[in-house]
Amino acid sequence: MGDVAQVVMEKSPDESCTYLSEIIGDESASGKMMPTGAVLDLMDLAAGRVAFNHVKGMVATVSFDHVELIMPVCHMDLVRVEGRLVSVGSSSLVVRVIAYKEDRHTRTFVKSTASYITMVALHKETLRPNKNIPKLKLEKEEDLQEEMKVKARKMLFTKWIEMQQQDAESILNANDVLDQSFHDNKREHLSIAQTQVEVRKQCLPRHLNPNQTLFGGDILIWMEQVATYTAKRFTGNEHMITLTMDRVSFTQPITMRDVLEMKAYVVYVRNYLLQVQVTAFVDKVGNRSDLKLSHTGFFEILNLDSLGFKRPIMTGINLNSATQEELHMYNNAKKRFYFQNDAKKLAQSKTQQNSSETKNRSFFFKKDDEL
Image 1 (cartoon, helix red, strand yellow):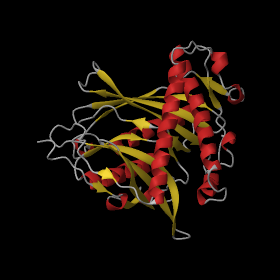
Image 2 (image 1 turned 60 degrees about the horizontal axis):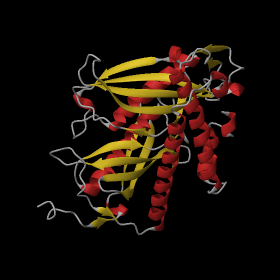
Image 3 (image 1 turned 180 degrees about the horizontal axis):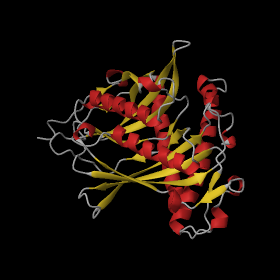
Image 4 (image 1 turned 30 degrees about the vertical axis):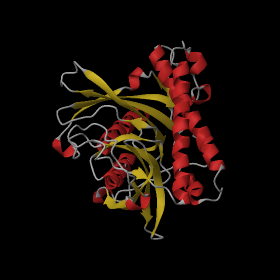
């Protein structure tokens, strides 16, 4: 019977691609920079719409690939988010999502950020992965190139995981892992444990998608909110903005009955940039007796002054009494920065130096090394 119901047809990306467009934020804060999480939420909705258009059934967010902010979005900006399917597996779907904001002076849209978002098709009754979905028919050159980019990103992620696993069992020494060039010029130093911020949120009906589980975009909003608060608490500065979010994979479905517990730490500090690790747990009982690890996110947050210019971070990390777990957190964050930086430079070397995206990167800084 299952064979009879098999879907054998193919669909092209043109049949499912779409866009969402909204004026976002609060009118009373018009012109002020918005948290990046608001854009991630809209990107998640667009990816879900594209995936639904392809399978004509239930879908859920599995992961966000690396996200980098090119141009900040401000309150009351018109934001357009375009989604296009670039790869389909047995039950998974990868959607390329690009967010644009309208420049009101030129009346043109400029790129704000982009990511590859992986969705999974679900059976309506069992909510298990549905492998009975249309295949993807790629005919356009741009679609074939995007499929190659997705494969390259997967290989890059696999390489990073292997690097982490190689170091997981090693005994680390604080002097060996400390990035000394970004340590000595600080006025004060806090241990990683002193940077901890813990938040517990009760899930409510308004946070649920049609699958009766929490929207992935809502989770990202909460995680980014916790990350930026942790960063502001660390620096004592209100003017900070999330520049990048590393890959986030959602491993636990979160329902209305669950409590989401998030723990955040500042794990790496440079001149103007710091990295916050946010780990999320699902509490299905409600009294913390049975916490299940859901996902971990890594946010790079830039320190600014009131005019929007880079401002040096004068607080550093003290590793003198750090545990092995904390040393590994710091070492992984440091390696993650250099790994992503090298990957970005390699990608940029393959594009035209005068592309609009390269120009837009100068909004925050001229050289990544300066961060």
